[in-house]
Image 1 (tube, rainbow, N blue to C red):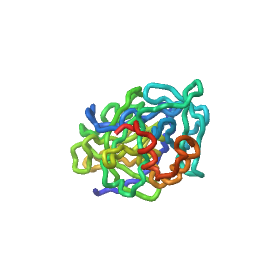
Image 2 (image 1 turned 90 degrees about the vertical axis):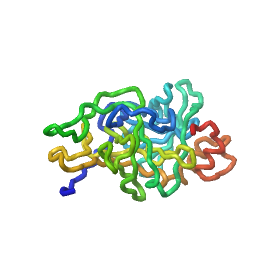
Image 3 (image 1 turned 180 degrees about the horizontal axis):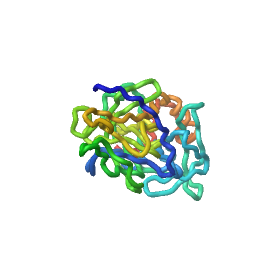
Image 4 (image 1 turned 60 degrees about the vertical axis):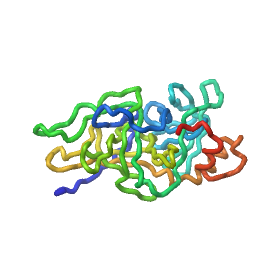
Length: 277
């Protein structure tokens, strides 16, 4: 490519706005798992993984009593299970009157090891793409626009995979490395999801953590637009925690889940039959 770039990771909690997905157009008909992404407090997101359960990251703060908006309704965090010092937590939610939540759309936990084989769907609330960024008439990315209360969906794919993290890039739409609905997270996306379909079932494989730069997202080098520079973003790799999430589910929602541990994917399939697929 002619240049090497220093990637600076910016944790996605610095804005009071929640969830931003940067797209390269007004995408229609993006495959998605339904109303499973929620707003965590005022500065982050979460993913529904059961009728009463959401996953989110930890670094954005909040705790028991934090407001959660999902599928057009407002809930609060009733109980939280953190996994040591890992940036992931399982949260039991309830209505504002203390009744058990009863979410109709939720996803399974991805527990495999082949995330790179899937085109992932990403989506969320809040900021959307703003004005295109140009240098000498050549577009190289997008400024971050205003916040929105509508879910915006896009797609991406794994460019690097470690035991703890999934990495994606924001490639220029129409190029060989871009997905059909190429998109990237932006500030406020902490806890939002990276979703894959496994045998027709939607599962969450990652929770967003960092982006490369603040206030804009690039697919070309803004200083020399002859060179590609797809911005990098990362998500916590959920599969690394699948088995202990399974155990935590049984502790937090013991009935009827106390019938036994079946492995996290089977447990959600058997006991949460209304999951969106």
